[in-house]
Image (cartoon, rainbow, N blue to C red; front, side, top):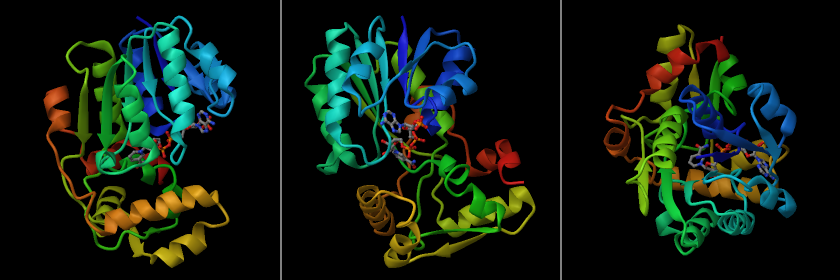
Length: 277
Ligand SMILES: NC(=O)c1ccc[n+]([C@@H]2O[C@H](COP(=O)([O-])OP(=O)(O)OC[C@H]3O[C@@H](n4cnc5c(N)ncnc54)[C@H](OP(=O)(O)O)[C@@H]3O)[C@@H](O)[C@H]2O)c1
């Protein structure tokens, strides 16, 4: 067995690599930025995998038996479909797709990739998580260090999940039988609105952290200089769904697969406290 891990510097991908290393499962990293992957995982086999460069997709899948398929947010489906084709051609048997909660009800690129995979004849498993806790240790980390974060999320609740739990489910589905042809709606153990998220930070870090709700217009204006226009549209639509309550979901999927409760938000903050201190 050998697993190709896409997005090895990503929130879930990097945790999956750590788990594969710890469990001595053979893997190869398909990295967008080679230096980043080499620095994070010294000694690991790293090849270039750039969805914008089809030739790298074909090369990356040679000699692997399973694929962890993930992509940056907002990517069109065609490049991932190309990787699925290349994987099939190269004799890959099993693919675990990082998707997102609720895509089954929408005609979005992640669902198009899922459907392509379902029709491919390969063994597939879809992981459909809600919002990652790790957004607060990456995108929002600097703001939290300054005392507060802002999002256009209103007072809606979200079943935030720790990317480490998603990665563990991915490893199980990649390495054990019995998970093929299934989609898992993955959530954390509790529903929190953003004020409660801020309270968790305040309590665990011992310094005041606040949440500022933004309107969609304020969010667009604030993010415009930093994000490509199409991705800003995607994020704006996703936050609209959050405000409408669509991420207020809690499932027992993590427990069913891993045999334990998913990690709590408080645990996530405790385990990463150095990032915000
Ligand atoms: N974040 C959430 O809360 C959340 C929730 C549910 C579902 N999702 C889904 O999870 C997936 C990952 O999203 P994320 O926001 O968490 O991002 P992420 O995985 O943390 O980071 C994006 C990754 O994509 C890589 N990448 C960028 N451009 C690439 C390219 N042209 N070819 C190959 N790889 C490329 C980046 O590599 P470099 O660092 O080397 O550029 C990085 O590893 C998305 O499909 C998203 O829709 C996210």
